[in-house]
Length: 109
Image 1: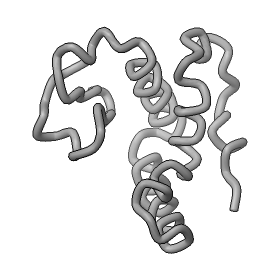
Image 2: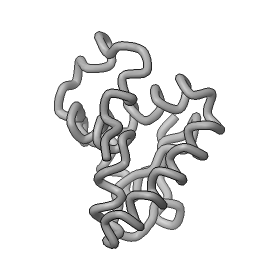
Image 3: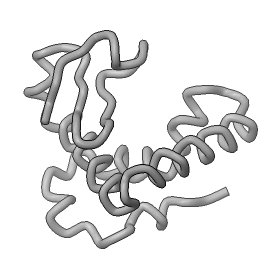
């Protein structure tokens, strides 16, 4: 379900997915197929990890990447969940053939 909320989406971002909702900053972003696909990839990741463990792992990995990279945006971009979503966001058929737990292929130092 897609909802519009300029207040729930952090500054500097266009959308955020908190299962089962996809929050977008503005109404016109509903037509952005690449952004919607990116957020759908996160929905799939969240389901695979039974939702709560996704958020725990996401937060832990972000904090580790922040210590490692010392820059917020670089830490965010290097989270395995984001790396998978950004890598495949333009492939609108990706979720049809995505292997189960594929996000773990994106974990690296």
